[in-house]
Image 1: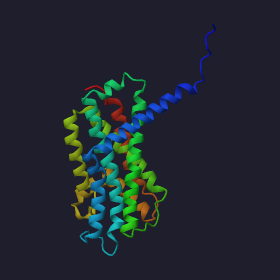
Image 2: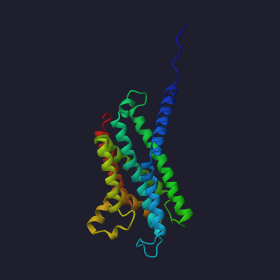
Image 3: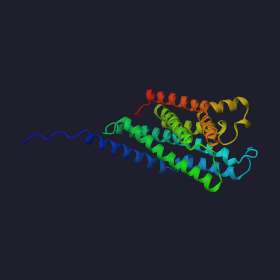
Image 4: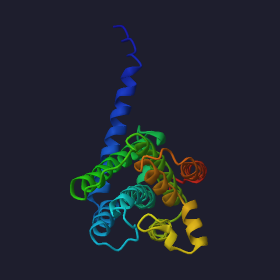
Length: 257
C-alpha cells in the first residue's frame, strides 16, 4: 500500500474561504437579529432623512432639504454600523469568551476580521440602498453626481468607523464600550453638521465638528452629490482618522476578556 500524494494547495484554501464566509454570515445574522442594532443602523438615518425632508424646519433656503440630508444620512449609517453596532457586538463577544474560543478553531484571527468586514459591507450595502431608494423614490432626490465618488467615500468611512469600533471593543470592558459608543454617536450627530447645518453652531464647535470623521465624511458625500468633485481636504480627515484607528486597534486589541 502506497501513501497517497498530497492534494493541491487549493484544497486547503477552499475550507478556509468557506469558514470566513460562514463566520461572516453569523456576524450578519447577529447584527440583524438585534433590535437595538437595527434601530441605530437603519431606524435613525432613515428617520432623520424622512422626517426632516417632509417637515420644513431646516434652514436650507431655496435648496431642497433632501439634498442636504442624504449625504448626512449616509454618513450617519456608516458611523452607526462601524462605531456602534460592531463595537458593542465585538465587545460582548470578547466578554463572553467567544473570541477566545475562536482562537481554538481553524479560523485564523485575520479571517475573523475579514468576516466582520464582509458583514459590515453587507449591512452598508443595504443601508445605502434604502437611503438612496427612499430619497429617489419618495422624496424626489436627484443628485448632480457622486456615482463613483460616493461609494469610495462610504468605503473609506466604513474602514475608519469599523477601526474605531474595534479599538473601543478591544481595549475597554463591554459595558464601557456600550456606554461610550452610544455617547460618542450622539455627540457626533450633534456637532458634526450631518443632521442640520453646522453653521448654526458656534464657530469653535462647528470647526471641531468638521474635524471629526462624521462631519468630514458628510462633507465629502455632499460635495460629490452636488457634482463638485472630490473634497480632498475632508477625505484626508476621514482617512487620517481611519489610519490612526486601525493602527491603534491592531496594537491594542485584546482577544480575551
